[in-house]
Amino acid sequence: MSRSSPLGSNTLPFRRLGRTQLRVSAIGFGSAPLGDLYAKLDEEGAIATVKAAVTAGVTLFDTSPHYGNGLAEHRVGAGLRGVPRDSYVLSTKVGRWMDPLRSGGTAVAPGAAAPGFAGGLKHKAVIDYSRDGTLRAFEQSLLRLGAERIDIVLIHDVDVWTHGEQAIEARFKEAMEGAYVALSRLREEGLVKAIGVGINETRMCERFARAGDFDAMLLAGRYTLLEQGALDGFLALAAQKGIGLMLGGVFNSGILATGAVAGAHYNYRPAPPEILAKTGRLEKVCRAHGVALADAALRFPLGHEAVASVVLGAVSAEEISRNTASLARAIPAGLWSDLKAEGLLRPDAPTPD
Image 1: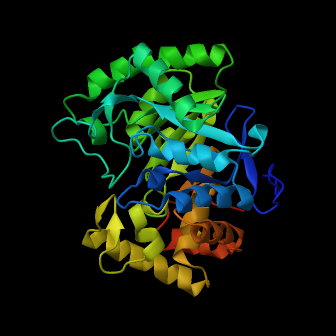
Image 2: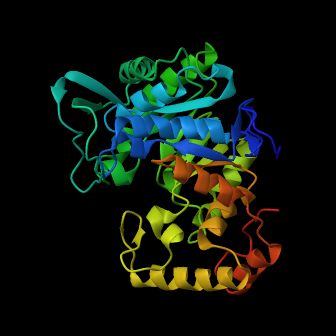
């Protein structure tokens, strides 16, 4: 892993994304908060956050039409305006296109869930994994970003969390017969450099990895200090196939950043007692080594060979600085061995150097 950044800041290491020729910073910028996730943001402040990430040496910028019904893409594009295009990697998603003549959010199936955006654009989101819907979404993203190209395009949210048990089989079939075919053609024509999926469930990541020829995947919340179940199949498969992984949710919705405090969240909900208890044990071992829990949580996933970047959301320059400083802090090897000895990390979990 190189210790310099293509943007020249020399503050962040960067890695090759799977078998592609793309190199990305070990910390990526996740733009869901810029879509007014949970709270409305000041426009200038949101754009300034993107610029702060550029200054810090971040080279991977991930966004989606879903984030504020296109608002995050607008803000990311504005923040990157004027930055040399070859100095960063731009990732967005398909699966939703926006109808500007209708207003509202996105309808989801009964039993499914979707994060709540407090603001965003008024356009109506249409869930559509067909070939034509995918090409429409791709074209709209180019326009909102003000970009001449997008490097990575991911099929978004083909999971039970989003669509529910009753609809997932139809959605998977639609995605493979529609979106996958369209993205494969864009890749063949050189219009995108990598295609993949962005979802919250390990099982669906593995299913897509076996069903098609994918370059990259963004998995949120399933390979962290609190859970390493992804080691049982998907991570090994990704390494075998040369699929580059971008990991979101490395703090499991906040608890690995805040610690086991009252009101701590896990998987977008108040943390249950067993998760609070395990987090408390993790904190105790970290304290014994003089390491902040959040620093260990950020660093741990980067120990796996298939992981190219941890994608972190931010809403201020201060949060960008905090994340980059966290990555730079030394963590003793004894921390990882003690976590394994305490049964808090799986014995087969690879750990950072």
